Length: 286
Image (tube, rainbow, N blue to C red):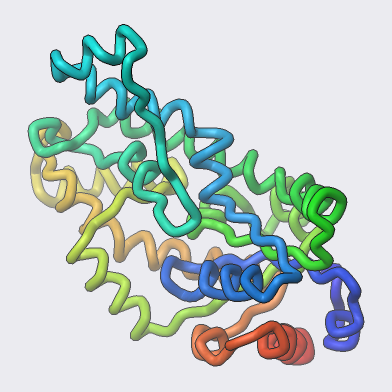
């Protein structure tokens, strides 16, 4: 780790942190709070994916839907209107809409082949965006003169790394440049996430081996053909399994490559001083 003690962290003139956790645990809250206080550059992995790496695919998907409407088709073909993605740090819906859900196309689903194609696009994009962290650390310092840097990752970071591999290319790169910090949730939070997801299921990205096994298990358990699967029902069913699949991966990342803090500790952080103290305490406990 680039900081091995609380004193290393507190005395560092340039603090560099990468947050990873399940959705809703405070990654973006902490990043936005630190950015607002003036000395921290906020690098959002999901925003980078949706703009630099998947922006064209997201916009083209919207255009393909518009082309089905004769009035809009004529305007698009004559370059009379513009359709683009208005993705932001706080609104990533264009990206999740593009990822989509597998199943019955009459219910908004995608064929399995198209769905897994988009999943593979996202995997490549997220790995590339993670490797861009070093570029943005240098850019934040050189161009914008920010002394400190925080990377706000997506929940799927754990899908593309092997924490047991000391030479994992993504983790090796990130750990050489940032302090990896896991925000650990409680069982109650996981239950709340499942309830929230049931109310509003949204597309996610998964390790292809896990995804295929989950898809095949769903088809077998409910005796349905791929083209008749209810898209929302599948991703609801898969979500709790995904949480159980990700939890030990996050834990290994923290044990072997970084530190962990609790969601309760994050909730009590109100300013930069509180954040620095939380990280220092976690380093002392490690």
